[in-house]
Image (cartoon, rainbow, N blue to C red; front, side, top):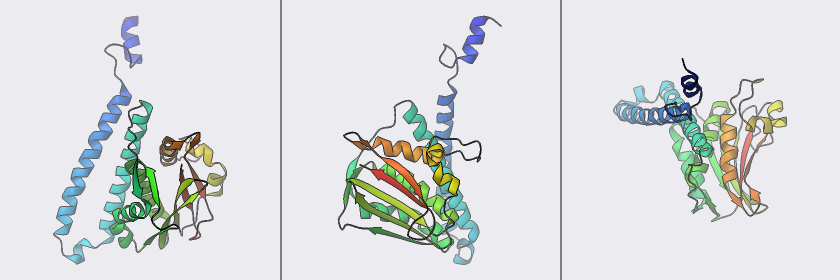
Length: 240
């Protein structure tokens, strides 16, 4: 093999080389579309079943894991687009109460199947915010999905304004985040943590989406806490 051929195989940018990040992104996109079609077919099939067959723990598990998988695929695509500066920001004004209600409604069947009560609270009536609904919705939706896994019986969404920033918090009544994760959360936000086996993908994605929202020199950020109103863990995203 010539030196030029070896260079082309090792360098994805070389003529005739293969850009594996683009291949992976394309594959993830196809997987996301296939999962969407599969879930549409599943919903049509399950809606035709009698209640005693459709309202089962297995159905809740399928819907939960499918939503979780879809969330991971969305994160991977989003991070790829961020890396190549192709993730568009489309902020718009919205009523925060409607936004929180919509996020909970997407998880309604899963919450009911697991006997978890979902609630929301907005401290200020008619609170409006200027943000990218799809991107922030992806972050909030993934956190809700994660909270469902650890909650005993309840999760809560809450929004308020602090220091001219919108704060959206997702709390549960589980055991909370491990102390080491709270103390070293900046390391988790950086990505893969080999000592814990955590990919940190969700936190890294949430931080990057928060940072896209900025005003003047203030950028958004995320925070993990264990003093939530339900006694468990609490995830916060701050949006200027």
